[in-house]
Image 1: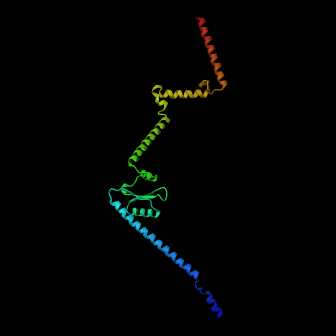
Image 2 (image 1 turned 90 degrees about the vertical axis):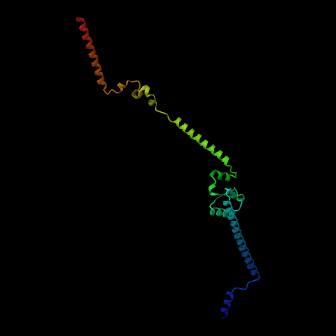
Length: 231
């Protein structure tokens, strides 16, 4: 029984000491401060959103304004402003090189910025429509000149017409072809006559024909001589 009572007493939580009470008190105070900071942050966000909604509404109703630039603000504020602009049907963009200098610009849909305008803002430049139009014309002119130069190079690289077709009225089409075939054959066979190169007879057959031609020629000469003496 005594052992049972001892185990029960040992398992029970000991009464807190003075140090434990102080730690718990600090923990409760810290939790209260965090909760209050969160509530304050939430309240500030709600107030900021309400103020942005009012400014955006005034901007939409002002027919003279096409765009509005805001002062640099934090990431959370920029996110809220982008959300308000999207709900209102506006276009919004953030610009700036670093976090401290980043700002938001909102545009009415009918006056949405062009790519050149956005590029100017990203470079930290002021948008000048007249200068932009001048640069656009220069780009177009440069593109046209480059296209013309490419066409000129293509015409110079490829022959305008075939040589034979160009001078066919002077040399004729058939003579040009015949000359080409003759030239090709002579180049192939060198200085030897083309007919000899195309002779398919054997050497013995050729010699026999030459001897026969000589005998025939000698016989013709003798006959001629005999008829002359008789007269």
